[in-house]
Length: 298
Ligand SMILES: [Zn+2]
Image 1 (cartoon, rainbow, N blue to C red):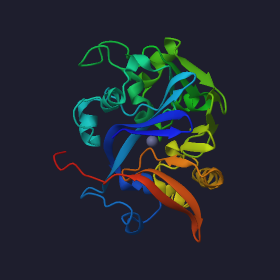
Image 2 (cartoon, rainbow, N blue to C red):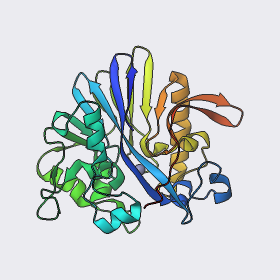
Image 3 (cartoon, rainbow, N blue to C red):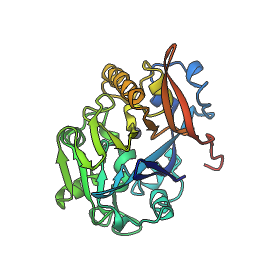
């Protein structure tokens, strides 16, 4: 579902490429199910829904789209397993709902190179796919990613190989559309990135700041609201779990200092929230919530 939010004079939209389903152990790692099922009830196969949100910023440097979801290049079997349903392009539909088409996007920012964040960056040239190299979904856009994360994606190991799909980024690199950066960047007036290592080595968050207001797009630095609330809850996906905890400690501090509006990318229930100091650590105050739902027809 699409939401429009103003941060000072900067208009932002939260869009979604839809829900897919992952094993609860992925997001909750070492945390016993008896604890995390208080946050979300898994289905009979222990699966929990995972949203794939993007942030669209109407900036003075043009339209900036942060992450682009799973997209539609995955084989039918994989899409069925993930619960991605038919090949409707949800992100593109939501983009249309807020008045834009893929041709309008000026910058696509990759928070990191995992498939559920950049799969939608490219698409097959033909409807049934695999007839040739994937092409850019956003034809005019300059795509931006971090150098270290591109290196990890280009040379994956046994543990990371499944999420790094070369068709998501290599065609962009070969067509000169992918700009590689190193460290925090200023993308436009009031729009900047920051590194938040833990989930990957160089994952980047996005800050939108104007007129004394702030928005923080957390990406997988805190995938769900509860991850920011409980620093020890670190997803099994994270390649540097102890670093994730320290990154979250810093982000929670920065968010409270600025009273930032937080956007959670994967939380199926809490879309945005603010943080305040609590007795046992930061407390979450949800602003936009959605009911968690399972699709029984899956
Ligand atoms: Zn993710």
